[in-house]
Amino acid sequence: MMLRLASRGFLYLFFTYILCAFGMFCVYYNQYIKVSTIYHQGDQAHAATIVMSHLDNQTKIVAIKTTDYTDDQAQAATIVTDLKGQNQVNDNNEGNIAEKNAYLQVKDTMSERTDIVKAYCKNITQSPLYKTFLKTRKKTGYKKSCGDLEVPTTAKIYVLEELKVVFCAVFKAASSEWKKLLVSLHDTYKQEAQETLEAPGIHTKWQNFAKPLKEYLPSERCHVLETFNKVMIVRNPYERLVSCFNDKFRRNTDYCRMVMQPGVDCLAMNLNDFVEQLSFGWAGQDPHWRSFFDTCLPCEIQYNNIVKFETLARDRDYFLETLGLSGRVNFSKHTSSSHKNYFDNMTQELSNKIYSIYEVDFLLYNYSKYIVPH
Image (cartoon, rainbow, N blue to C red; front, side):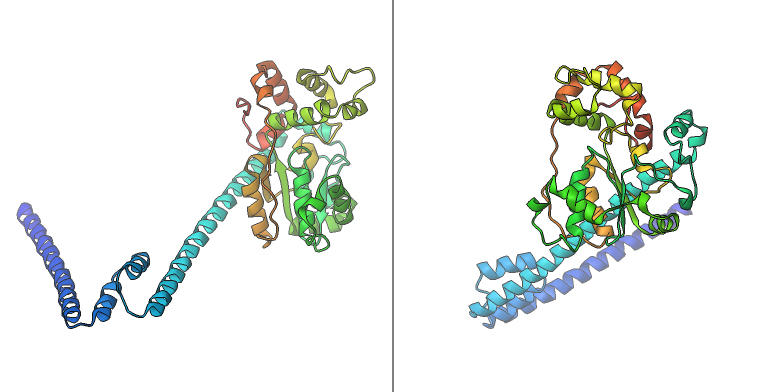
C-alpha cells in the first residue's frame, strides 16, 4: 500500500515538472515566433529590442556594440551609457554590502576582545596576580565606581572633548600615528597636510587639545568615562619590547644613557641584558616599556574599542566609522620594521622572562605565550 502511494506521488511530481517545462517552452517559442515574424517584416530594431529585454546588462552592452541594433548611433550610445550606469549602481550596492559585512565582522571582533578583558578583570581577585595588581596600583586599588577612580601618573589616558573620545596612548604601539590621526580630526588642524603633523610637532599639537584624564574632577571624569568612545591600542608584548629595545637602545644611545644607571655600557647592552633589568622591577619606570595594564587601567576603564597593532588599518577604519568620520582622513599605510633576527635568536629562557614580566598583558589581550612572532 505504501509503495503504491509513493509511486503515485512520484508520478504526480514527474508529470507536474513535465507540464511546467512544456509551459516555459511554449512561452519562449511564442517569443521566438514573434521576434522572427517582426524581423522578417523588416523591423529589425523592434525584434532586437525584444531579444535585448531578456539579456543581462553586460550582455546588452556587448550586443549593442557588436551588432546593427539600430541605425541611430547616438541612441545606441545613450542606451549603452544608461546600462553602464545601472551596472555601476549594482556594483556600488555590492560594495556597500561588502563594507557593511566587514564592519559587522570587526564589531564582533571588538566585542570578543572586550569580553575577554571583562572576564579576566572580573576574576582578578581570585588570581595569583592580584597581589601584584594591588602592589602596582597602591593608590587606586580596584574601584568599581568611576568617581572613586584615582588616575596614577603612570597612566597615559587623554580626553578629546570635541571628538568625545578617550584615548590611551601606549608607547611603541602606534601611539604617535594615532595622535596624528586624532589631531587631524580636530577642527583646528583638519585642513593641515599630513607632513605638518609629523613628530616632534605632533606632540605639541596634541597637548593643545588632548587633556589628561587625571586633570578632571571626579564628577566630570564619570561623565566622560560613561559617555565617550574609549579606545586603546595593544601590541604583541614580544614585538613591542623588541621594538622598544631596538629604537631606544640600538638607535638612540643617548636615551639609554639618560634612563640607565651610571656606568652601564649602552653600546654593549643586548636584549637579554635589557630584559634582565626589567625583571628587577624596572618595567614600570618608563612609558615605552610599561605594561598596557598600568598604562591604560583596563580593569577600571571599560574600553569599547581595543585596537590591535596587528590589524591596525582595519581597526582604525572601524573606529572612524563608529565616530561617523570615515573618509575624513587618508593616512599612508602603517609600516613597521622587521625584528625577525631577534626572534630567531631568542632563547626559551628569555621568552619566559618576557612573559613573566608582561603576563597580565598576554592574558588580557589574548596573546600567546608560545608563539614568538616572526
